[in-house]
Amino acid sequence: QQPVQSPQAVILREGEDAVINCSSSKALYSVHWYRQKHGEAPVFLMILLKGGEQKGHDKISASFNEKKQQSSLYLTASQLSYSGTYFCGTERAAGNKLTFGGGTRVLVKP
Amino acid sequence: GAVVSQHPSRVICKSGTSVKIECRSLDFQATTMFWYRQFPKKSLMLMATSNEGSKATYEQGVEKDKFLINHASLTLSTLTVTSAHPEDSSFYICSARDMAMNTEAFFGQGTRLTVV
Image 1: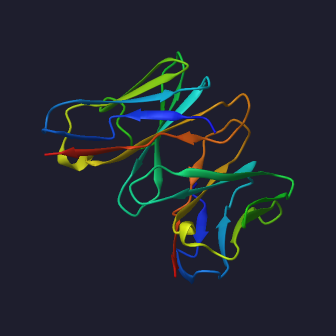
Image 2: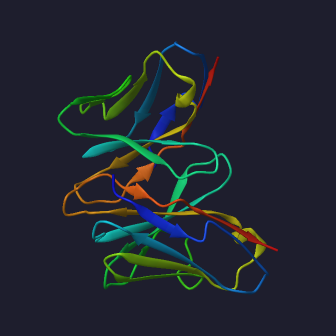
């Protein structure tokens, strides 16, 4: 079952923050986050495993709330290069397939 | 990070012909490869899971006789779109993953297929 992402789109000014959420109705083993630029393949950002961990990469970080089966991706002090479509991919068991959410289109303006 | 190479990046073919897309993992052994289809401004829709040396597992609604998948080695999987029609036009992306290590999925560059 496809995870639900929100919001569907967000427009930011450079330097502003944003949060993207990814929710599942089923218990998850892991959540993967990817960013895709137009016409290109998705690029891996980070993976979070069950256990409620948090991770960070530069000014992009994420958390995974196992009780809520929800992951959030935090874009802090956004840069123009952050523009793109962000997808979460969820895995219900170790070694299982990834199911992707509908995506969140992010546009960072100068 | 690991590199997955997908070829060709763009292909235009006539209706009724077949097109083969290759996906290679260049620096790791991909026990499992996945084939996705993506429509404009839409999500990645999983078509099938390809395991080396065995038959692919297709998602519900995907015609296995139309989308032939072969995973003959740990570094190569191919998707053949048979008897292509204009509605098969889409962006096809493969990804490779070392399931034993439970790492992230690495994506190929994608193939833009246009059937005329």
